[in-house]
Length: 98
Image (tube, rainbow, N blue to C red):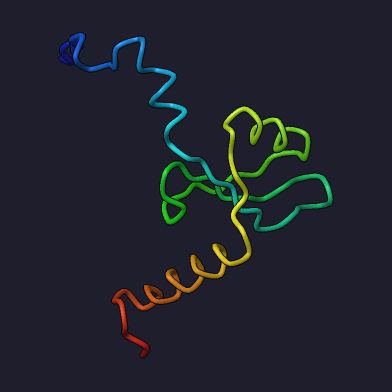
């Protein structure tokens, strides 16, 4: 039998902080491709571009998504840095090239 979990007031931020906390964490998008000239493939991250989810949306939905989340598109330099960081871990350990 599953017991009901009761939340306390301390589990959620006070109402006056809701907007501040949400606005203070940067959000990023990185377009990785298109699909059938109808969809945008992209990565979305909150706070740290290295931790992301991959999403696919129609172009207009993507524009609205970015606007709603105030997401910033990563620059070419930031994308290259991310690729380099991910490449270092390709073999499961940093610095291992074999």
